Length: 110
Length: 110
Image (cartoon, rainbow over all chains, first blue to last red; front, side, top):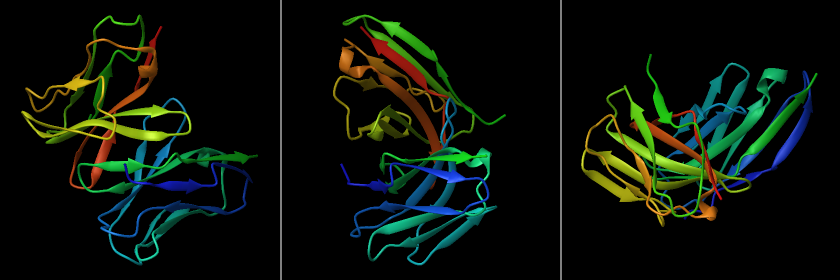
């Protein structure tokens, strides 16, 4: 089992504030790094798939960066809104075998 | 509508009583996978399948069986469930780097 760690485990953000959190993964034999958004009582939904060192992806107010040499990825939420409240999962691996982190649970307070 | 469906969504059963959780996808994906989610541990892969009649173990396969007789279906079988298999189970299908998750099955084994 590959060691994928996410920090912090949870965070609370005031509406309108920006925040970011980390996913750490093994820096050797890199294939792809995935980010998922998981709302309570729903299925995880894919946000980004990142494959190249230095990759930056953006979807609306959410963006992510990737550093494969040092083994980390950051997810940023700009101007947090209550609908951003969710657990954000990262996963490391190839097409068939993915190792997930435990997630960062974001709560946005109005 | 493209989707992954699981049945049942909720199940309470007793130790040793064989059960099957069904998973079906309508996206003609070759890849399908089963995960379990436990608090603080993130998603852990149980089994995956790269095509019909091709399956392989994930990180936590003990106590589970799968079959892939048709492309659209990938049932998860618990021959003799035990309380430590109480968990939230997700089926996923995908193509390339993208995975689509089902709604989850919450299983309680007493």
